[in-house]
Image (cartoon, rainbow, N blue to C red):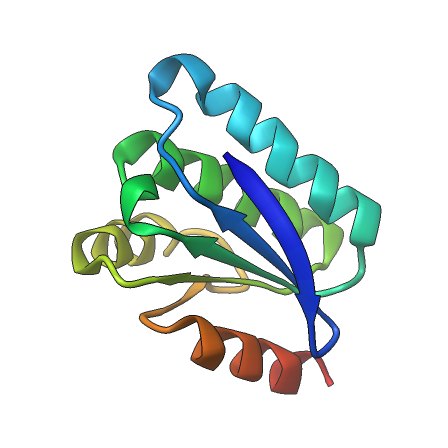
Length: 116
């Protein structure tokens, strides 16, 4: 469900499938563990096409709130326009604002520059 790599000093967490409501907490926990393990490294969460449903969006928003509390810069990359709209609409109340990109390379580059 989740894998991770490092690119340009950025932790890149890839979510490859939608866990459904029953495993949403597990997804949130996996992402949170990675963020805690590598903080203060900035994070880009990549949502693959199969991972753009409401449970994934909910887990990402929870991770973003946690990152805000920890002072960790986080952004998201997904090709799914509906998922981008959901993330952007529901993340408005959290500061710093969640930045959502359509392309992974753009998200990594922007996060690298912002964290420098």
